[in-house]
Amino acid sequence: MQTSKFNLAIALSLAAIATFTGACQDTTAPTDGNGETSTNTGAEGLKLGSLTPTTGDLSSIGQNMPIAVELAVETINACGGVNEQPVTLIQEDSQTDPTAGGAAMTKLAEVDRVAGVVGAFASSVSSAAVDVAVRNQVMLVSPGSTSPVFTERAANGDFDGYWARTAPPDSYQAPALAVLAQKQGFERVSTVVINNDYGVGFEQEFIKAFENLGGTIVNKDNPVRYDPKAATLDSEAAAAFAGEPDAVLGVLYAETGSLLLKAAYEQGLSEGITILLTDGVYSEDFTQQVGTTAAGQSIIAGALGTVPGADGPALEAFTALWKEKTGKDVTAYVPHSWDAAIAMMLAAEAADVNTGEGIKNKLREVTSGDGQEVSDPCEAIALVREGQAINYQGASGNVDFDENGDVAGNYDVWTVNDDASLSVIDTVNPLEAL
Image (tube, rainbow, N blue to C red; front, side, top):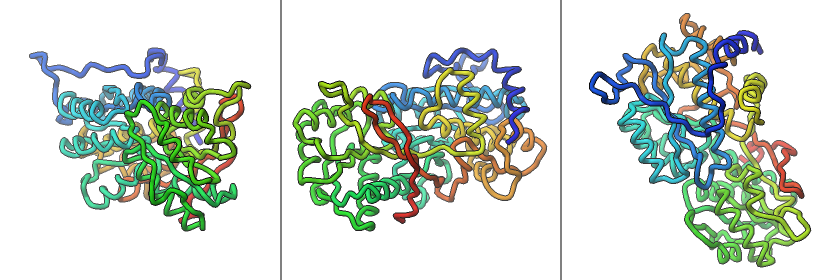
Protein backbone atom coordinates (compact mmCIF):
# COMPACT_ATOMS: atom_id res chain seq x y z
CA MET A 1 0.00 0.00 0.00
CA GLN A 2 1.44 3.34 -1.04
CA THR A 3 0.77 6.10 1.47
CA SER A 4 3.58 8.64 1.08
CA LYS A 5 1.95 10.63 -1.74
CA PHE A 6 -1.34 10.65 0.13
CA ASN A 7 0.22 11.73 3.43
CA LEU A 8 2.29 14.47 1.76
CA ALA A 9 -0.75 15.98 0.07
CA ILE A 10 -2.70 15.89 3.30
CA ALA A 11 0.12 17.44 5.28
CA LEU A 12 0.39 20.31 2.83
CA SER A 13 -3.25 21.30 2.73
CA LEU A 14 -5.21 19.85 5.61
CA ALA A 15 -3.54 22.20 8.05
CA ALA A 16 -6.36 24.57 7.20
CA ILE A 17 -9.10 22.17 8.21
CA ALA A 18 -11.10 23.36 11.19
CA THR A 19 -10.82 21.17 14.27
CA PHE A 20 -13.45 18.49 14.10
CA THR A 21 -15.28 19.37 17.27
CA GLY A 22 -18.70 19.94 15.73
CA ALA A 23 -20.25 16.78 14.41
CA CYS A 24 -22.27 18.55 11.76
CA GLN A 25 -21.34 21.78 10.05
CA ASP A 26 -23.24 23.19 7.06
CA THR A 27 -21.36 24.67 4.14
CA THR A 28 -23.22 27.58 2.56
CA ALA A 29 -24.20 26.78 -1.01
CA PRO A 30 -23.00 29.09 -3.79
CA THR A 31 -25.44 31.80 -4.88
CA ASP A 32 -26.02 33.58 -8.15
CA GLY A 33 -26.03 37.34 -8.67
CA ASN A 34 -29.56 37.63 -7.27
CA GLY A 35 -28.69 35.84 -4.06
CA GLU A 36 -30.53 32.66 -5.07
CA THR A 37 -29.01 29.23 -4.55
CA SER A 38 -27.32 28.07 -7.72
CA THR A 39 -28.51 24.81 -9.26
CA ASN A 40 -26.04 22.00 -9.84
CA THR A 41 -26.10 21.69 -13.61
CA GLY A 42 -22.68 20.06 -13.67
CA ALA A 43 -21.03 23.22 -15.00
CA GLU A 44 -20.05 24.35 -11.49
CA GLY A 45 -18.02 22.40 -8.97
CA LEU A 46 -19.26 19.12 -7.56
CA LYS A 47 -21.61 19.50 -4.60
CA LEU A 48 -22.10 16.65 -2.17
CA GLY A 49 -24.27 16.34 0.92
CA SER A 50 -24.30 14.17 3.99
CA LEU A 51 -27.38 13.02 5.89
CA THR A 52 -26.28 11.40 9.13
CA PRO A 53 -27.60 11.25 12.73
CA THR A 54 -25.81 13.64 15.05
CA THR A 55 -28.91 13.72 17.26
CA GLY A 56 -31.60 11.18 18.04
CA ASP A 57 -31.60 7.46 18.75
CA LEU A 58 -28.48 6.66 16.67
CA SER A 59 -26.40 9.71 17.49
CA SER A 60 -24.00 7.74 19.68
CA ILE A 61 -22.80 5.96 16.53
CA GLY A 62 -23.57 8.61 13.95
CA GLN A 63 -21.74 11.59 15.43
CA ASN A 64 -18.45 10.68 13.73
CA MET A 65 -19.92 10.02 10.27
CA PRO A 66 -20.10 13.63 9.04
CA ILE A 67 -16.54 14.16 10.24
CA ALA A 68 -15.39 11.28 8.03
CA VAL A 69 -17.26 12.71 5.04
CA GLU A 70 -15.74 16.15 5.61
CA LEU A 71 -12.28 14.63 5.85
CA ALA A 72 -12.84 12.77 2.56
CA VAL A 73 -13.84 15.98 0.79
CA GLU A 74 -10.90 17.90 2.23
CA THR A 75 -8.59 15.08 1.13
CA ILE A 76 -9.79 15.12 -2.48
CA ASN A 77 -9.70 18.92 -2.53
CA ALA A 78 -6.10 18.72 -1.33
CA CYS A 79 -5.40 16.55 -4.38
CA GLY A 80 -6.88 19.04 -6.83
CA GLY A 81 -10.61 18.58 -6.38
CA VAL A 82 -12.97 17.01 -8.91
CA ASN A 83 -13.09 18.10 -12.54
CA GLU A 84 -10.61 20.88 -11.81
CA GLN A 85 -12.73 22.51 -9.10
CA PRO A 86 -13.06 22.16 -5.32
CA VAL A 87 -15.86 19.99 -3.98
CA THR A 88 -18.49 21.70 -1.82
CA LEU A 89 -20.01 19.78 1.11
CA ILE A 90 -23.37 20.49 2.76
CA GLN A 91 -24.05 18.60 5.99
CA GLU A 92 -27.51 17.79 7.38
CA ASP A 93 -28.57 16.05 10.61
CA SER A 94 -31.14 13.29 9.99
CA GLN A 95 -32.07 13.36 13.70
CA THR A 96 -32.63 9.56 13.37
CA ASP A 97 -36.13 10.50 12.29
CA PRO A 98 -37.74 9.65 8.92
CA THR A 99 -39.76 12.85 8.79
CA ALA A 100 -36.82 15.13 9.62
CA GLY A 101 -34.50 13.10 7.43
CA GLY A 102 -36.88 13.20 4.50
CA ALA A 103 -37.17 16.97 4.81
CA ALA A 104 -33.39 17.34 5.00
CA MET A 105 -32.98 15.16 1.91
CA THR A 106 -35.50 17.30 0.05
CA LYS A 107 -33.48 20.41 0.97
CA LEU A 108 -30.24 18.82 -0.21
CA ALA A 109 -31.76 17.66 -3.50
CA GLU A 110 -34.11 20.48 -4.41
CA VAL A 111 -32.63 23.58 -2.76
CA ASP A 112 -28.91 22.86 -2.49
CA ARG A 113 -28.95 20.81 -5.71
CA VAL A 114 -26.28 18.36 -4.62
CA ALA A 115 -25.23 15.59 -7.00
CA GLY A 116 -24.69 12.94 -4.34
CA VAL A 117 -25.39 12.33 -0.66
CA VAL A 118 -23.64 10.14 1.90
CA GLY A 119 -26.53 8.79 3.94
CA ALA A 120 -28.66 7.99 5.59
CA PHE A 121 -27.70 5.71 8.49
CA ALA A 122 -31.03 4.54 9.89
CA SER A 123 -32.81 2.37 7.33
CA SER A 124 -36.08 4.10 8.12
CA VAL A 125 -34.53 7.45 7.21
CA SER A 126 -33.01 6.07 4.02
CA SER A 127 -36.44 4.72 3.08
CA ALA A 128 -37.78 8.27 3.35
CA ALA A 129 -34.79 9.79 1.56
CA VAL A 130 -34.20 7.43 -1.34
CA ASP A 131 -37.36 8.26 -3.29
CA VAL A 132 -36.48 11.95 -3.05
CA ALA A 133 -32.99 11.13 -4.34
CA VAL A 134 -34.24 9.05 -7.26
CA ARG A 135 -36.82 11.65 -8.26
CA ASN A 136 -34.12 14.33 -8.38
CA GLN A 137 -31.41 12.12 -9.90
CA VAL A 138 -29.19 12.40 -6.82
CA MET A 139 -26.87 9.49 -6.03
CA LEU A 140 -27.48 8.22 -2.48
CA VAL A 141 -24.76 6.05 -0.93
CA SER A 142 -25.49 4.89 2.60
CA PRO A 143 -22.66 4.00 4.98
CA GLY A 144 -24.93 1.90 7.19
CA SER A 145 -28.58 1.37 6.20
CA THR A 146 -28.60 -2.41 6.27
CA SER A 147 -32.24 -3.37 5.80
CA PRO A 148 -32.83 -6.07 3.14
CA VAL A 149 -35.73 -3.93 1.87
CA PHE A 150 -33.30 -1.90 -0.23
CA THR A 151 -32.00 -4.99 -2.01
CA GLU A 152 -35.57 -6.01 -2.85
CA ARG A 153 -36.51 -2.55 -4.11
CA ALA A 154 -33.32 -2.22 -6.14
CA ALA A 155 -33.97 -5.62 -7.74
CA ASN A 156 -37.45 -4.39 -8.65
CA GLY A 157 -35.95 -1.39 -10.43
CA ASP A 158 -37.30 1.19 -7.98
CA PHE A 159 -34.05 3.14 -7.69
CA ASP A 160 -32.83 3.37 -11.30
CA GLY A 161 -29.29 2.93 -9.99
CA TYR A 162 -29.35 5.94 -7.64
CA TRP A 163 -28.80 3.81 -4.53
CA ALA A 164 -25.80 1.96 -3.09
CA ARG A 165 -24.35 1.22 0.33
CA THR A 166 -20.85 0.58 1.64
CA ALA A 167 -22.06 -1.62 4.53
CA PRO A 168 -23.41 -5.09 3.74
CA PRO A 169 -27.16 -5.70 4.15
CA ASP A 170 -28.69 -7.62 7.03
CA SER A 171 -29.25 -10.52 4.68
CA TYR A 172 -25.57 -11.09 5.59
CA GLN A 173 -25.45 -9.80 9.18
CA ALA A 174 -28.47 -11.74 10.43
CA PRO A 175 -27.02 -15.08 9.26
CA ALA A 176 -23.70 -14.09 10.83
CA LEU A 177 -25.44 -13.59 14.17
CA ALA A 178 -27.30 -16.88 13.71
CA VAL A 179 -23.95 -18.63 13.21
CA LEU A 180 -22.64 -16.96 16.37
CA ALA A 181 -25.71 -18.11 18.32
CA GLN A 182 -25.28 -21.67 17.13
CA LYS A 183 -21.58 -21.71 18.01
CA GLN A 184 -22.50 -20.53 21.51
CA GLY A 185 -24.74 -23.58 21.86
CA PHE A 186 -28.02 -21.67 21.91
CA GLU A 187 -30.95 -23.79 20.77
CA ARG A 188 -33.85 -21.52 21.76
CA VAL A 189 -33.77 -17.79 21.01
CA SER A 190 -36.42 -15.08 21.41
CA THR A 191 -36.41 -11.83 19.47
CA VAL A 192 -37.33 -8.22 20.25
CA VAL A 193 -36.87 -5.57 17.57
CA ILE A 194 -37.51 -1.92 16.87
CA ASN A 195 -40.57 -1.72 14.66
CA ASN A 196 -39.07 -0.26 11.48
CA ASP A 197 -37.39 -1.50 8.28
CA TYR A 198 -34.15 -2.23 10.10
CA GLY A 199 -35.61 -4.15 13.02
CA VAL A 200 -38.25 -6.18 11.18
CA GLY A 201 -35.97 -6.93 8.23
CA PHE A 202 -33.22 -8.19 10.53
CA GLU A 203 -35.70 -10.25 12.55
CA GLN A 204 -37.01 -12.05 9.47
CA GLU A 205 -33.54 -12.80 8.12
CA PHE A 206 -32.34 -14.06 11.51
CA ILE A 207 -35.32 -16.37 11.95
CA LYS A 208 -34.73 -17.92 8.55
CA ALA A 209 -31.00 -18.41 9.13
CA PHE A 210 -31.30 -19.69 12.71
CA GLU A 211 -33.97 -22.21 11.79
CA ASN A 212 -31.82 -23.39 8.87
CA LEU A 213 -29.12 -24.12 11.43
CA GLY A 214 -31.54 -26.19 13.50
CA GLY A 215 -32.48 -23.57 16.10
CA THR A 216 -35.90 -22.64 17.48
CA ILE A 217 -37.38 -19.14 17.68
CA VAL A 218 -39.40 -19.16 20.89
CA ASN A 219 -41.72 -16.28 20.01
CA LYS A 220 -41.88 -16.72 16.24
CA ASP A 221 -45.69 -16.69 16.24
CA ASN A 222 -45.85 -13.66 18.54
CA PRO A 223 -42.95 -11.38 17.59
CA VAL A 224 -42.11 -8.51 19.92
CA ARG A 225 -41.74 -5.26 17.98
CA TYR A 226 -41.58 -2.01 19.90
CA ASP A 227 -42.55 1.53 18.93
CA PRO A 228 -39.45 3.68 18.17
CA LYS A 229 -41.09 6.54 20.07
CA ALA A 230 -42.07 4.49 23.12
CA ALA A 231 -41.41 6.08 26.53
CA THR A 232 -41.59 2.82 28.52
CA LEU A 233 -40.99 -0.74 27.40
CA ASP A 234 -41.84 -2.87 30.44
CA SER A 235 -44.42 -5.06 28.70
CA GLU A 236 -42.21 -5.57 25.64
CA ALA A 237 -39.33 -6.63 27.88
CA ALA A 238 -41.55 -9.13 29.70
CA ALA A 239 -42.76 -10.61 26.42
CA ALA A 240 -39.28 -10.87 24.93
CA PHE A 241 -37.78 -12.75 27.88
CA ALA A 242 -40.74 -15.12 28.35
CA GLY A 243 -40.65 -18.77 27.33
CA GLU A 244 -37.27 -19.70 28.83
CA PRO A 245 -35.03 -18.84 25.89
CA ASP A 246 -31.29 -19.50 25.98
CA ALA A 247 -30.71 -16.05 24.51
CA VAL A 248 -32.69 -12.99 23.45
CA LEU A 249 -31.84 -11.20 20.22
CA GLY A 250 -32.38 -7.45 20.52
CA VAL A 251 -32.36 -5.47 17.28
CA LEU A 252 -32.41 -2.06 18.91
CA TYR A 253 -31.47 1.58 18.73
CA ALA A 254 -29.47 2.99 21.63
CA GLU A 255 -31.90 5.26 23.48
CA THR A 256 -34.97 3.03 23.30
CA GLY A 257 -32.97 -0.20 23.48
CA SER A 258 -31.37 0.87 26.75
CA LEU A 259 -34.84 1.42 28.22
CA LEU A 260 -35.91 -2.08 27.20
CA LEU A 261 -32.88 -3.87 28.62
CA LYS A 262 -32.98 -1.86 31.82
CA ALA A 263 -36.66 -2.80 32.19
CA ALA A 264 -35.82 -6.48 31.72
CA TYR A 265 -33.15 -6.29 34.42
CA GLU A 266 -35.37 -4.42 36.88
CA GLN A 267 -38.08 -7.06 36.44
CA GLY A 268 -35.57 -9.84 37.10
CA LEU A 269 -36.06 -11.30 33.63
CA SER A 270 -32.56 -11.31 32.17
CA GLU A 271 -30.63 -13.33 34.75
CA GLY A 272 -29.02 -16.36 33.12
CA ILE A 273 -30.06 -15.33 29.61
CA THR A 274 -27.49 -14.13 27.10
CA ILE A 275 -28.37 -11.01 25.16
CA LEU A 276 -27.50 -10.91 21.47
CA LEU A 277 -27.11 -7.46 19.92
CA THR A 278 -26.40 -5.86 16.56
CA ASP A 279 -24.59 -2.95 14.97
CA GLY A 280 -27.29 -0.43 15.93
CA VAL A 281 -26.05 -0.33 19.53
CA TYR A 282 -22.33 -0.84 19.03
CA SER A 283 -21.34 2.05 21.27
CA GLU A 284 -20.17 2.48 24.85
CA ASP A 285 -22.66 5.33 25.13
CA PHE A 286 -25.34 2.65 24.79
CA THR A 287 -23.90 0.31 27.41
CA GLN A 288 -23.57 3.20 29.83
CA GLN A 289 -27.19 4.19 29.20
CA VAL A 290 -28.30 0.66 30.08
CA GLY A 291 -26.69 1.09 33.49
CA THR A 292 -24.95 -0.96 36.15
CA THR A 293 -25.82 -3.27 39.02
CA ALA A 294 -25.50 -2.32 42.67
CA ALA A 295 -22.01 -3.80 42.53
CA GLY A 296 -21.05 -1.51 39.66
CA GLN A 297 -21.09 -4.15 36.93
CA SER A 298 -22.74 -3.53 33.57
CA ILE A 299 -26.29 -4.87 33.52
CA ILE A 300 -25.59 -6.49 30.17
CA ALA A 301 -22.05 -7.74 30.84
CA GLY A 302 -21.42 -10.78 28.66
CA ALA A 303 -23.79 -9.68 25.90
CA LEU A 304 -22.58 -10.60 22.42
CA GLY A 305 -23.10 -8.75 19.17
CA THR A 306 -22.05 -8.35 15.56
CA VAL A 307 -21.04 -5.30 13.55
CA PRO A 308 -19.79 -5.00 9.96
CA GLY A 309 -16.02 -5.17 10.05
CA ALA A 310 -13.64 -2.84 8.25
CA ASP A 311 -10.72 -4.61 6.63
CA GLY A 312 -10.02 -2.74 3.40
CA PRO A 313 -6.53 -2.09 1.98
CA ALA A 314 -6.90 1.62 2.81
CA LEU A 315 -7.79 1.08 6.46
CA GLU A 316 -4.28 1.48 7.89
CA ALA A 317 -3.61 4.80 6.16
CA PHE A 318 -7.10 6.07 6.92
CA THR A 319 -6.81 5.13 10.59
CA ALA A 320 -3.53 7.03 10.89
CA LEU A 321 -5.04 10.11 9.23
CA TRP A 322 -8.19 9.93 11.34
CA LYS A 323 -6.25 9.75 14.60
CA GLU A 324 -3.96 12.56 13.51
CA LYS A 325 -6.77 14.92 12.57
CA THR A 326 -9.39 14.07 15.22
CA GLY A 327 -7.48 12.53 18.12
CA LYS A 328 -10.13 9.80 18.19
CA ASP A 329 -10.23 6.09 17.56
CA VAL A 330 -11.97 4.93 14.41
CA THR A 331 -15.52 3.94 15.35
CA ALA A 332 -18.14 1.83 13.61
CA TYR A 333 -19.17 3.00 10.13
CA VAL A 334 -16.55 5.74 9.95
CA PRO A 335 -14.57 3.88 7.23
CA HIS A 336 -17.83 3.20 5.40
CA SER A 337 -18.67 6.92 5.45
CA TRP A 338 -15.23 7.80 4.10
CA ASP A 339 -15.51 5.24 1.30
CA ALA A 340 -18.99 6.41 0.28
CA ALA A 341 -17.71 9.95 -0.23
CA ILE A 342 -14.45 8.97 -1.93
CA ALA A 343 -16.21 6.60 -4.34
CA MET A 344 -18.69 9.27 -5.44
CA MET A 345 -15.96 11.82 -6.06
CA LEU A 346 -13.94 9.33 -8.12
CA ALA A 347 -17.07 8.51 -10.12
CA ALA A 348 -17.77 12.18 -10.85
CA GLU A 349 -14.19 12.63 -12.04
CA ALA A 350 -14.51 9.58 -14.28
CA ALA A 351 -17.79 10.89 -15.69
CA ASP A 352 -16.22 14.31 -16.34
CA VAL A 353 -19.45 15.90 -15.13
CA ASN A 354 -20.65 16.96 -11.67
CA THR A 355 -24.09 15.39 -11.70
CA GLY A 356 -25.88 12.58 -9.95
CA GLU A 357 -26.37 10.82 -13.25
CA GLY A 358 -22.66 10.99 -13.91
CA ILE A 359 -21.85 9.53 -10.50
CA LYS A 360 -24.41 6.76 -10.98
CA ASN A 361 -23.04 5.81 -14.38
CA LYS A 362 -19.43 5.55 -13.22
CA LEU A 363 -19.70 4.37 -9.59
CA ARG A 364 -19.25 0.66 -10.29
CA GLU A 365 -16.66 1.32 -12.97
CA VAL A 366 -14.25 3.01 -10.52
CA THR A 367 -14.82 0.52 -7.67
CA SER A 368 -14.70 -2.86 -9.40
CA GLY A 369 -13.59 -4.63 -12.55
CA ASP A 370 -10.19 -5.05 -14.13
CA GLY A 371 -8.83 -1.57 -13.50
CA GLN A 372 -5.69 -0.87 -11.47
CA GLU A 373 -6.31 -1.59 -7.81
CA VAL A 374 -5.59 1.54 -5.79
CA SER A 375 -6.38 2.56 -2.22
CA ASP A 376 -4.72 5.98 -2.00
CA PRO A 377 -7.46 8.49 -2.94
CA CYS A 378 -4.99 11.02 -4.35
CA GLU A 379 -3.36 8.40 -6.53
CA ALA A 380 -6.78 7.08 -7.53
CA ILE A 381 -8.13 10.40 -8.73
CA ALA A 382 -4.88 11.21 -10.51
CA LEU A 383 -5.16 7.97 -12.48
CA VAL A 384 -8.77 8.75 -13.34
CA ARG A 385 -7.75 12.19 -14.62
CA GLU A 386 -5.25 10.46 -16.88
CA GLY A 387 -8.03 8.33 -18.32
CA GLN A 388 -6.88 5.11 -16.69
CA ALA A 389 -9.26 2.46 -15.37
CA ILE A 390 -9.13 1.95 -11.60
CA ASN A 391 -10.57 -0.40 -9.01
CA TYR A 392 -10.79 1.61 -5.78
CA GLN A 393 -10.01 -0.44 -2.68
CA GLY A 394 -11.49 1.27 0.33
CA ALA A 395 -10.95 1.46 4.07
CA SER A 396 -14.12 -0.50 4.85
CA GLY A 397 -13.47 -3.17 2.21
CA ASN A 398 -13.10 -3.61 -1.52
CA VAL A 399 -16.31 -1.61 -2.19
CA ASP A 400 -17.43 -3.91 -5.00
CA PHE A 401 -21.06 -2.88 -5.49
CA ASP A 402 -23.29 -5.51 -7.07
CA GLU A 403 -26.22 -4.84 -9.40
CA ASN A 404 -28.39 -3.88 -6.41
CA GLY A 405 -25.84 -1.52 -4.89
CA ASP A 406 -24.84 -4.02 -2.17
CA VAL A 407 -21.42 -5.08 -0.90
CA ALA A 408 -20.49 -8.26 0.94
CA GLY A 409 -18.43 -8.55 4.11
CA ASN A 410 -17.51 -10.38 7.27
CA TYR A 411 -18.53 -9.33 10.78
CA ASP A 412 -16.70 -8.56 13.98
CA VAL A 413 -18.01 -10.24 17.13
CA TRP A 414 -18.07 -7.94 20.13
CA THR A 415 -18.88 -8.33 23.80
CA VAL A 416 -19.80 -6.07 26.71
CA ASN A 417 -17.26 -6.14 29.52
CA ASP A 418 -18.01 -5.80 33.24
CA ASP A 419 -17.08 -2.11 33.15
CA ALA A 420 -19.47 -1.48 30.19
CA SER A 421 -16.61 -1.17 27.72
CA LEU A 422 -16.71 -3.07 24.43
CA SER A 423 -14.20 -5.55 23.03
CA VAL A 424 -14.00 -7.22 19.63
CA ILE A 425 -13.28 -10.88 20.33
CA ASP A 426 -13.77 -12.74 17.05
CA THR A 427 -15.05 -12.62 13.49
CA VAL A 428 -17.86 -14.61 11.94
CA ASN A 429 -18.66 -15.48 8.33
CA PRO A 430 -22.33 -15.33 7.32
CA LEU A 431 -21.78 -17.80 4.48
CA GLU A 432 -21.82 -20.61 7.04
CA ALA A 433 -25.58 -20.06 7.39
CA LEU A 434 -26.41 -19.28 3.76
